[in-house]
Each structure stands twice: as C-alpha cells, then as structure tokens.
Image (cartoon, rainbow, N blue to C red; front, side, top):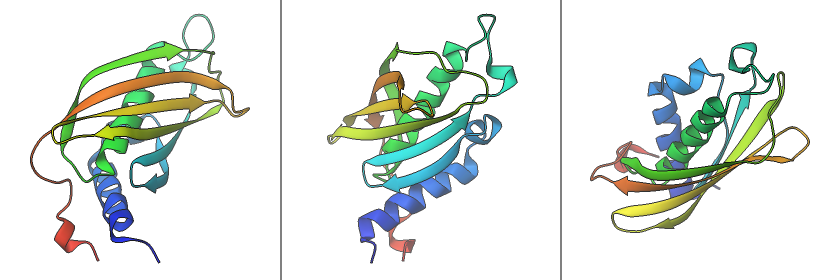
Length: 147
C-alpha cells in the first residue's frame, strides 16, 4: 500500500508533466517518483549533437534542470530555481538513453537543495548538478483531492 505522501508526490509530478512543454519536446520521460526522489530518462537525439559529435552541454544542463524541477515537485510545492551549478564529467553520445536521478537533500520553510546525477547506459556519471530552490506558497495539486 502506497503512503499518502507517495500518492501526493506522484500526483504532483504527473500533473506537472501533463502541463510541461519542455520535457516532451526533448523526449524526457518520468521513470520513478518517490517523496524527495525522481528518476527521468532522455534519449540523445541527432539534433542534440554538437560539432564535436557529443551531446551539447546546454542540452545536458536542460535535462538536469528538468530533473531538479521534478524532484522539487515531489513535495507538492510550487517553487523556482534560484541558483545551480553543473559539472560535466563525461560525454553523452548519439543514441544513448541517459538516466537522471534527482534527490532533495534539504527542504526548509522557504528554500531547499536538490542534487542531480545523470548517467549513461553503462552507469558512468555524465553530469553532477546541484540546485537551490525557493518555495512559493501553494501546491502543484490540491492534496485534499488525492485519494
């Protein structure tokens, strides 16, 4: 039996995904949702490859930022990123399906921190990203409507 917190986390992330225009445009898909943790995937497509024949860093940043946003939503909060940093550790190549995990490390009254790790199909770390979010009042979904 799923806990109420998990049901709300899933409802918030799935509701957010239905309204998201960016994630579907880049082939990003929700894989796992838990309270304080999400896993998403993204295929590296032809239009994402730069002149050095690897995935453009801006696309990897976008994927990490999307994961960051969904990790925040597992707490059913409305918020915005206010700071982030990224480390590119390895190239991502055409045809790979990247898998990214976002974990809420701290969630205070008004701010919190999320760590994101993106891996290639071999499990090698491609990106490490850390973001800070600011929480607004309100919820992504009305928690009273989640069964």
